Length: 148
Image (cartoon, one colour):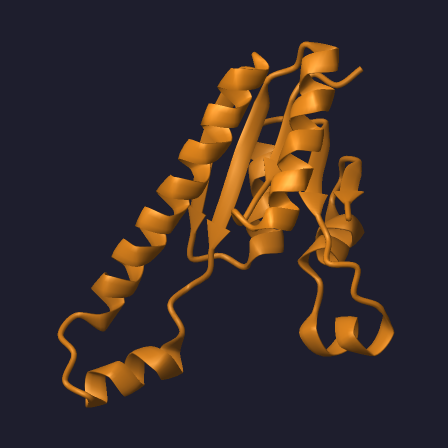
């Protein structure tokens, strides 16, 4: 049914559930997956504070840490895909809001399904904290499967 599945992950336990679910769908449909993780832009106020404290190259350190974390997340996802017998492409989107990066990657890779986790926040907490899953669901032009 699906020809190319995008699985979004941040490496969390909940996101790993979505990864496993997406890999199961991919195996069933003999579809390759693209696994994406998104790192947000460096936090301006935190970087300014570190600069005031005299830390050299705070932005560079942040970007190195983000790249290393993304690499660990994607390596784990690729390992799980390999164990499931699913072809896997890995994508690290830098300096974007997660929902934007997920939607852009789905479009770039011609994915026909996005699989991602949701924390299941409702009403006021979703309004206050925002929901990347809700934003992807609202703005995606392809179906989105939310795993709780």
